[in-house]
Image (cartoon, rainbow, N blue to C red; front, top):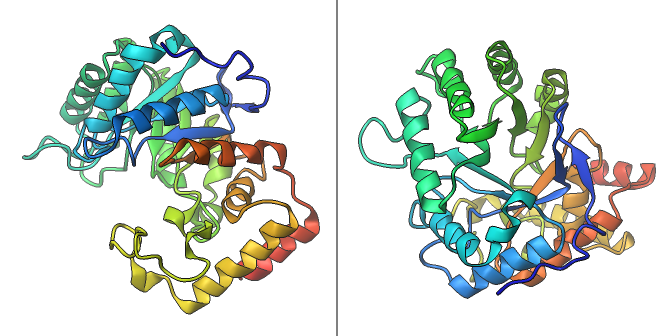
Amino acid sequence: MYQANEHRYETMKYLRCGKSGLLLPRVSLGLWHNFGSVDCYENMREILFEAFDSGITHFDLANNYGPSYGSAEENFGRILASDLRPYRDEMIISTKAGYDMWPGPYGNWGSRKYLMASLDQSLRRMGLDYVDIFYHHRPDPDTPLEETMNALSDIVRQGKALYVGLSNYRSDQLREAAAILRENKTPLLIAQPRYNMFDRWVESDGLLDTAAECGCGVICFSPLAQGLLTNRYLNGIPADSRAARNHFLKAENITEEKLLTIQRLQEIAEGRNQSLAQLALSWVLRENKVTSVLIGASRKSQIDDNVQIIKHLDFTTNELSAIEEVLR
């Protein structure tokens, strides 16, 4: 039986999430890869144990994480039941109504029917009575925003979620959604955008400031640009990489210019005694406007490597200027 490290809270740093009473770890674990039905179950257990032992209390899922769809929630639920149940109240578990979950017109987007059914399925898969955070995963261009937000409010009233989150919402959308939730007295805890050194749309959009105005925190996904901001691509495209397998990261997008940028960022990382991945994660957290950063892991050693950033989140003015020069 798993016994958690009794010193797990001594090294992780936690930050208040918006204007809520909740603290989140600066590093959170996303289960979008390596927790599906095609993956090694024992490896999943080792990753989760290492994360929790390192002070990571927030575990981020969605109904369609796998593959196959739903299998990440099922596997997380199995490990929760067999090993982590005594620690449930020390954990923040989030899930989302994700993309294309089941055939037909009711397994996608933002209708009341989809959100309600999605969360009911997620709770069954994980063996939970409630999740701490339930997200709407992307804005729906066709469903009235009031319908989606009112469904989230009712989910909280039913006790199936403690807080709600909004993923992939831009500033204007977040502001409008927050106003509806505020009127409903529903706690909007967090916004979840994609943000990394190569994808900085949140800066021009003003999302970080908008989230602060709305009283919610920010947690960023894809901080390593799907592996680009790691040492995997320093010398080109490895045969076993995501880009070579033509997943979401496309080989044709990895140009000579981008590889040169990666190499120059690696030099800055070495000057800070960090790996490139550690530099990229620290950079996302360089201001307290970002509450937490979501990491993925294929093995437990990656958890320890990533958590080391907690010791080195500060940047000098010269380091930030050098990074901007490289990214320009």
